[in-house]
Length: 143
Length: 165
Image (cartoon, rainbow over all chains, first blue to last red; front, side, top):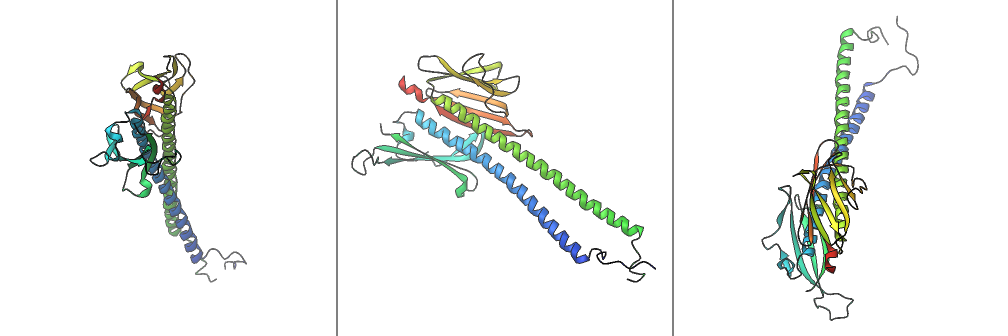
């Protein structure tokens, strides 16, 4: 005859094992999801950094060029729509820029006069969601 | 508890339970190892991305205050790597960036033999530049992350101090 188990020695019930397993699985799945999210963000920021560098390159190229360049005429550029941004021969994003007339409110001239030109460079990637576009703006003098 | 329910576990039952437990534990261990390697790869890649941005920003800052820029070949000459020498309006060299063959890092300093150390800690696989009249084009900066993955970036910086020429 085996001795009767005492108080507190009843073992672990099936329901307890099932609940513990479910909790463990939820924890593991959440952990895996967080790892995947982290890696996805790293990849997303890689393209974002490339896009920011490309936008800076375009802005610097416009700054280094002539103020009478056709790239700084009022309107949208390039004329054929966004052009590909290439890094080492691989297209990773699309860039475009707009040139708008800008009235300097502090110079005392009439409102609506063209004192400066506002250049906005946009570099987009992915599916064109709002968080997949980098935008840089700079004011250029009028020649 | 009667004798039937208190009979304990047979060797077959223990074996099956141990085999299942081993499978579960092995699965958890492999998941942990793959997650850890994934995490490490992501972290090292993020560091390389940050270093690429920092390298481009450092070069751009120096170029902005320079008047003239000259691209020089690396030592020893390599089509994958170049250097950049910046001058002030008097024609005096103010700063230079070059790829160092001994550590594969991009170094900087005010002149030849005046090495102020590497700009960033990530190894540079390719460092290619070009100059236009008022522009330094950083054609390609390719950094190698700790796990071997490559991070590529390109940009440009204008020689704003050339206005005074």
